[in-house]
Every structure is written in C-alpha cells, then in structure tokens.
Image 1: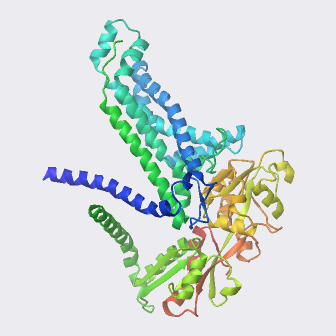
Image 2 (image 1 turned 135 degrees about the vertical axis):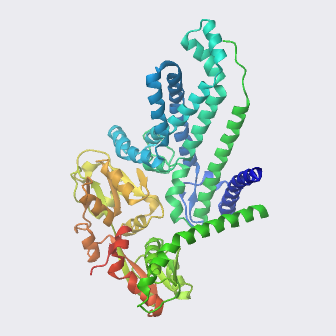
Image 3 (image 1 turned 90 degrees about the vertical axis):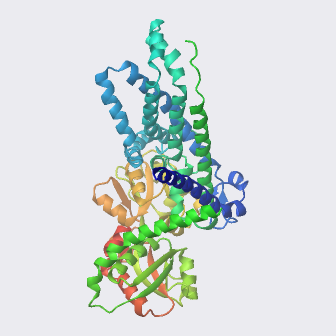
Length: 283
Length: 287
C-alpha cells in the first residue's frame, strides 16, 4: 500500500515535469515555425509583435544578460559562501558559530521580492550616486549574490561537516597547520559537495525573477559596463507575458524553454559532480 | 504522448476544481440580496482592450455576486478586436480604451472610467514644467542633461514602460512616438515600480498612471507630478476631461443594450464600482 502510494507520488512529480516541458514545446511551436531559429539571434532588436513579420525577436541580449548576472553572482558568492562555511566550522568559537549559522539560515528564508524591494530603494540609489541610472548589471549581480550566498554557505557547511573525522585526525597527527588541513584535506574531500552547492546556487540565480526585474533596469541591450542596465530572460517573461499575443507570446515560451534547457544542463552537471567521489589526494 | 495529454487534462481538472471552490462562497453569500430584484440569468461575453479587461473582470465578479445565475466572460485581444467582435456579434459588449473613431460611429459608446498618465520627476529636481517638445526630446535622447531644460547639471535617466502596457501605448500615442525611438535607461513593469525608481533617483523622469502617482505623492513619496500643456496633473482634471494625456475607457454595443447587457452596463457605470476603478489606478467619471 505504502509502496504504491510512494510510487504514485513519484510518478506524479515526474509527470508534472514532463507535462510542463510538453506544454512549453507546444506553446513555442508557432514561434519556431513563423520566426525561425535564426531570427532569435540575428534580428536587429527585441521589439516583438503578435505577427512575426512585423516584429523583431533578438533574444541574444537577454541570454547574455541572464548569463552575466548569474556568472557574476556565482563568482562573488561562491568564494564568500565557502569561506563562510570554513569560518563556521573551523575558526568561529561555538558561541559565535551557532548564531552565525542561524543568521545564514534566516537569510536563505527571505522571500526574493523583499531582496528586490530592498535593492530598489537602497542599493539602486547608492549605485545611481556613482553612475546613472543605478538600476544596472552591477545591482543585479549584488542582489543575486546576496540571495544565493546562504544556499552556498549552508550546503558547503554540510559538505565540510561530513569530511571523515579520521582524515582530520590524520592531518593533525601529521602536524599540519589549520590552513594546511583545510587546503590539503578538507576542501579536496568535500569537493563534490562544494560543487553541488555552487550548481544549486547557479540554478537559483538563473531562475530568479522578481528581484532581478526590480533592480536590473530591464533595457534590452548588450551591457557596455557594469553600470549599464540589462534584461534577463526571466524578467522579460514576467514583464511581457500578461500583454503578449500571437508570435510574441510564443517567443516568450521559447525563452522559457531555453531557461529550462539551461537548468537541465546544470542538473546533469550536478548529477555527474555528486557521483564522482575523488579519492583523497595525499596531503 | 497520450500519457502527457492525460496528465494535462488531470492538471486542468484540478485547476477547474480549485477555481470552483474559490468561487463558491462569493456566489452563495449574496443569494439573499437578489430575492427582491428581478431575476437575471445568462452569459455575457466581453472582448477587447487588455487595459479594460482586468477592471471588467473585477466588476464582473462583483456583478456575479449580486446575480448568481449570470456569468460574465471577459476576453482580451485589443480595442480593435473589441470593435470587430461587437460588430460581428461574437461579443455582447466590446471594450475599447480610446474614443471611437469616425468610422466606428455605428457603435454605442458607454464610458465607464478614464485612464490618465502623468510625467513624474523626483521632488528634489527643480524642474517643474516641461513642454511637449522637451519631453519628446528627452525620451528620444536628443536632450540628455537636466541643465538643457532649466534644471541643474546632471544626466537624465529616462524611465520607460515595458512593451504592452497601456500607459506606454497612451504615452507613445500622445507624443507621436514609436517605442523603437525611445532611448530608455530603465524599463519598468508596473506603476509602483516606476514611482519607486523615480523616488530613488533625483535625475530620473518617468510616467505612470495618474491615480497611483497622486495617491503616492499624497503619502509623502518624494515625487513631483508635472503639468501637461499647462494643466496641472490630477485625477480631478482627468475626470473633468481637461487633462490632455488621458483617454476614455469605453464599453461599446452594436445596438441600444437591453436586458442583461443594459443592467451590466448600468452597474459598471454606477458609483458602486468606483472603488474597483480606483484600485486599478483608473479615474471614475465625474458624478
């Protein structure tokens, strides 16, 4: 009975994913047909229209926007998150480590729209003081880093915590310094867990919509600098879906499918990363 | 493949069920109000402007609560579809978010509300008046510094709306612009985001629905509403039809409406729905 119930639940969740993909494919078909693959990267701009022949459909600036904000955030939050986990496990006295970990957990629970709102009323005006218009690639990267930092910190913390005690004792017996233990034993042993942390965070950054929409400026362009506004694929869908019709609507589903593909790639990467268990190198 | 379609239909069934559950309390609670009035039943189809559709969906819900046997079906597709469907009889009522054109005089317009937008700048910006030409120049990028329009030295941050928004349409239409001509620095979605963007940036200029701007300025948000053509921006001026950057939101019918359609139009024009109209940041008609 229980087994059946579990099977049903598992089947249902698997099917929901398939149904969503099928739906995305079906809804994006009109755009594949009437706009065609090439125009999504060769058109002059993104000024979509319900009729494919009247609009322009270049998705490239938004793909670049998504990749830049995500990459920037992961580059910033990755080292910080892993450093935070190391600090929590090996440097902080227990009196500090516990409340610190709770703070990070709290950070993970804040809804994205709150981050976005904070970004819009605090961060963007600060950046605008340096260079107009304030709403920019930089603002997006900073907000996203803040949002994915707790994901990385918490998963990395768990990964570091599961390094076998014997390895640590062996390192201590060899007389390794604290830093030597971390660089030579802890980090290599926890490598797959750390990679999983980064990949999970990347997926969150890719899919984030509200916060990015509020701080990025949403101008469809290849950004010339960190202070230039960008639009991400997710923000584009959120901004235009309610009003889109015909081929325009269908083109938005194409960008949805694209995001889904990116996430699928990352899931595959995470799967490979968690499967390979590198043996401890000799420290 | 059939598995997927089965899944789809299951998901759809669940959705329909949820909607059904969500709708029931509203319908049952109002049964009492209806006992003394004449009993209305049937289905009313409205199609047209995506600006008016959300408002009509709200008004339709309120109407259904009073008349449990009535279904109001609201579909979007633009003002021109509203006109076409109304003529062909596909829709009982069309929704048109502009004044009727000369060749549309065969239809009967019933204005339900007004939509007005105003230009906003930060309160600390000394500029309090811009001519239409200056606004066009700023939005097309040929003026890029506040000192060129009487302000202090500083780059102008142009805030534009995302494609498809009715405020964008009205703005472009009034200033005879194409969206491709606009050199935007920030693109925003809804009115609140526009107001926060301008309130947080003393060098920004934007445009939003007049109702929202007036409300927020009254709440102490640091924005200033600029006049258009010398007429101060405000919902009162819009309601009286004096404000140039505004348009009527019309329901249209092919013939003089009767029965259910007439009752619904009367309801949509009554003061009962003024709250709903204000909630969508439109301006109710003057009493």
